[in-house]
Amino acid sequence: MTDATRCKAGDWVEVERVLLEPADRSKNLPPETAEKPLMMWIKGFAQAAGAVGAAMTIETMTGRLVEGTLSAVNPGYFHTFGNPIPELVHVGVDLRARLAEYHAAQADAAAQKGGA
Amino acid sequence: MATKFDAIMARRGEIMRKALGMDYSVFEQSPIAFDYEGMMTAHGYSLQDIVDIQTKAGVGNTPLLELKNLTDVVRSMSEPGKGARIFVKDEAANMAGAFKDRRASVSIHVAKEKGYEGVIAATSGNYGAAVSSQAARYGLKCIICQEAFDSRHIGQPEIVEKSRICEAFGAEVVQMTVGPELFFHMVELLDVTGYFAASLYSSFGVSGIETLGLEIANEMTALTGAPPTHCVITHAGGGNTTGTARGLKRAGATDTQIISASVDLSGLHMASDDDFNRKSFTTGHTGFGVPFATWPDRADVPRNAARSLRYIDRYLTVTQGEVFYITEAMSKIEGLERGPAGNTAMAAAVSLARDLPRDATVVVQETEYTGAGKHHWAQLNFAKEMGVGVCSGDPKNNVPGKVIVIPERPEQIRAKDFDLARLRKSYVRNALKQAPEGYAPTADDIAFLAADTNSDAAAVEAILAELKEA
Picture (cartoon, rainbow over the protein chains, first blue to last red):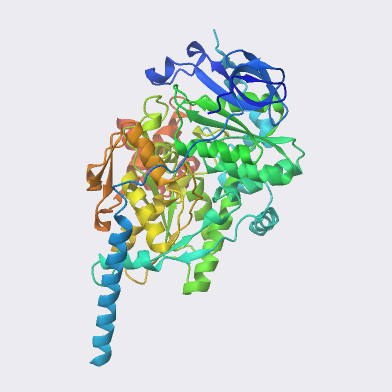
């Protein structure tokens, strides 16, 4: 996340808004979903200077003007691969050893057949 | 009082008709039956036309690779004489990294031809990347609606990456919290913008996948002298199964067994805010696979072009841990690092090939791109953070949303057969629900239901009798 809490007009920002209040939502939802609003986040260019938490209008990539609450300034992506998974680190060694054994056995069988 | 949701949904038919540029009502034949082939061919494109559209769009003609090491691993644990050859169609080589480029290319071509200014799709998957990429090439505006976060604004790494790639291709990405109202907002946006609905489930999208089946039939014939004996397909909404199977058949590969495969996520509710981040697969799972097979017309189009029960010969399920194991194995022994969801069919293929004769040929018909977030390590690290247990052991002990069991040995990878009779019965029950109460299905309805479930009139009549009794 960026630390910026203020933007200038024209900055790339994100706004959030409630799309549907719980009362307006679909009737076929499990209770833990039904009790929460349907939220939305969308990025675009700020139409004015503003602060995180205040009302903001953005122009999106398709040119739509969307109103919401400023939720991030110059928002980035911070997903990674993370640490190796201990339960998976043996897979490569195990399978390579298994293949070596299998290929050696195949070669032996072929040699025996050839020699017979 | 009608809610905002109800108000938009009430106008859905009219909005979608405009946004699809197609009137589905002409295909309806009765409260139950419709002209499926008529709908599939109404766009007027031959298979060759679609190949040409895709060639121009930079889509398709991906490498078909034989996986000799994986085959040998299978043979090392098979009974004598068993262990089929395994091949993969490396669909990750498409521009946006998945077979979904095929699906998007026809829709985008049509949107451009018909003069729409932009396109909209609701998808949290690779399809979003495909639509965004094709739209960028054709100079169309693009909005992708994604179910991205739980109510705490926490998103799975896999979905966060899919938001990123769509934005990288210049799409406007609308990220939402959990709930089926994703489609409500898509319909609302179609109404406001007048854009084309690049639905996953239109005949344009599904026809675009037929070229994958065609390529597999032709390339396997060139390589082995015949089309594959088995094609294993990762199964979610049903388009992948439907399109690939149709393409194989159109290429003359009528004997190829169609095996669909999904990750077992039984017990997790797809609209649950609590369960959302306890899934370690966001597609290719039974949470889409089963409901869409048993009622395809739940989709965002009046009649879904993806009707998987028409084509499935066997439906296999595998566990999350089995797919993660195979994903790691593919990197280490085949030098093919690909995304986990696309390897669902690969895990099923390893189990399947073990029981087939050595001269059988099994094609896994897709891979998907990988990268930060969209990777088995990222998904497993995230699962741990969300309180899902990850351990080594026998995948039989896997519990979706609670414990992911990574196999200790490849012998432990055993796909399970999902009962197709159960799916067919459920489908017929759902089809009947669409008709007015007391409606008696005609002989034509029964013929339609038999075709739509890949069974026969007698089997459908038996189900109808059973349902009547219940």
